[in-house]
Length: 399
Image (tube, rainbow, N blue to C red; front, side, top):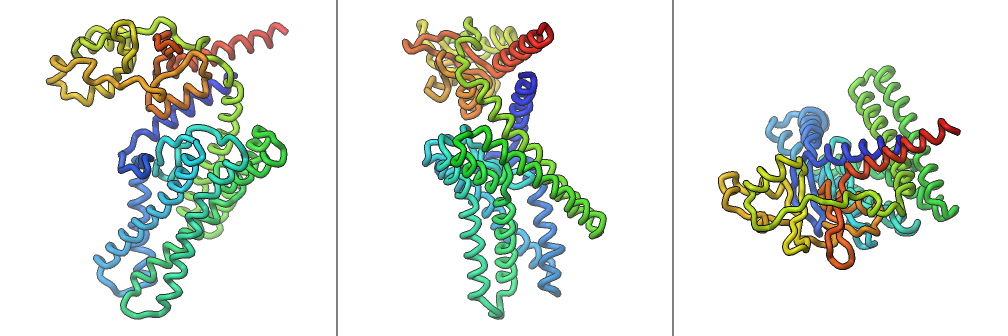
């Protein structure tokens, strides 16, 4: 249980770190966010195309020509990555699985799917959606290259299509490797799950396969770096391998944590006496009388004994500071909905999923009559896990 508590802290920290990015746009209700590390890899790819790929395959052209081709090709490459993740997300949503957003980051992109698929068939559909998109893009680029042939006049366009065709083919092949967290690993998990009926065993098999693939990648990276004298390429492969190994192990640990916490009702975890605020005080009064006193990041807003919303530090910061003295809490309150509240009968995995979707660390707990009965936070859940861990450790020592 101590490992689970640490896993929860690590998972929360990882989610928070990925939130440090720039929202780009939304597609079909799915938000696209660029993590700060994505800008670094985007710059590296543009630089590699501009000074490496295009000058080598298309010599004796002006620098501006190479820069233009590099930027355009990199744009369509990242569009391919986005389409890959978007297809995962769209299929997941159509199968009833909520998706928070897609994050573009250093190692590509990731769709933040908020719950496990209900059955192997759904897992297989979601897992194969991304590779199918990459296969279609790769086939389209190869077809376009073949149609163009040796047509004179547009060699830059043809070479850009070659690059995109190769890149998407590699992306397809890499993602189909049979190990978590890659798409092929999820396909493997779906097949084992379907054969055994045991999600835990299937996840364990796919996780071990993912760690084995990561180990082989480390050996390949070392060989390329030392024997092939390409230190940077070898180092990059090793970094990807380390990321995959950590993600593969985390996938199994998160499933164990989810199974252990399923059925643990929030009634036994929540803080029953929640600090509430009225809707008719100003934001200045909220800061002075509540935030600086209790140090919470959000508070239930209650009117005439009934919860009507949630006021957060984020919503306060959206209001210009000079207007805090005349803006009421009720004017900036986030309304209570099924997505921003919980029931005492909900379990901990449900609470964590809903907090992630709402991007809140604390959510009100409301009973069937609409009465506020408490509030639950990530801190409450971690404290609960720590207590269970301490009790388990004490029981083991006494036995």
